[in-house]
Image (cartoon, rainbow, N blue to C red; front, side, top):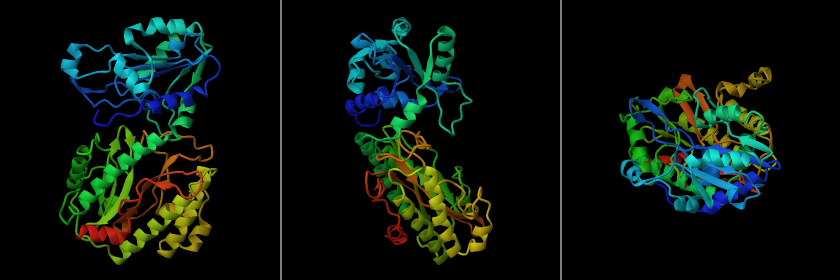
Length: 430
């Protein structure tokens, strides 16, 4: 792994948080992700399943975690099952976790090799009252491809048809959305790496540069700072391309007079950052570009203040919509009559700001969290309003990552990253 060692106390506490939600006699099983094949003998780089990672810190394929807090045997209250390592594996694939290293990483004392799993599981199932199985229940999940967890669930239900099944996902959504101080520090590290990337390309950008040149400069900076790379596919969208919300081709030339919308973030230790900044290709915003930019910045700043404990996300987005409508009227893009005549299901501001303002962020860029419960302290969100005007070849979106506090404004993890137009222009022309 490129990242520094993480304290096992994080995972010990995360497991305590999880077990506090289990029913009496509940046993939970979590699987690692697959290594996904592309073709021939080629594979994608391994990315660990976020849930087993959150609970154990084990960042390795072919791993299993069993949690059974009511087990009569103390050593079987928490168990890790790992792929058995060897000198041969070390030569061909590199060092894998030993039992001792797994304990150092996770704080779990009982570690077995995978070939013992079925025997141990049968013993535990004879004692447990119900079994918690895990699946991807993110509201935007694409679950067409079957993964290791899916196969395990399918086989489990065939082998053990009489066992009562419970769902781990609702618990994981709840506990993962509340960030531990160690997690907040890791997210801040990802944001700091992202800041280095932005500062690198501010002085690099000029008319004629290609969007992929900027992407390459960012990747260079990320890798040099112990990041694996982008937390998600980056958007480097100049001119009219900025009005395409998920533009990822990044293959056009940046032209004099255009603005580049850049939505990117470094990952660090599997934690995501998510930044959006807009910069003028020639280092100077026009009066109109600055007007739209400052309107978006105003909405972002005011929206951030609304992220306080007790707020419902649905109500929050309605409030942000009202803030945006005021700015769009001031810009001459919509009228008060447009607002009055709009359908409740598609408010007037949606013509120029058609996406949500905030989403959970953490181990996933669009992290898990429960939208039907009020916001709590130490939840982390993006704040990313935008105005997109295709007829003006202009799209402006500004985005920071923030952590909700018990009182007062959220903690902005990107507070030091340039965002005011004057500072951006000065850095681009220094």
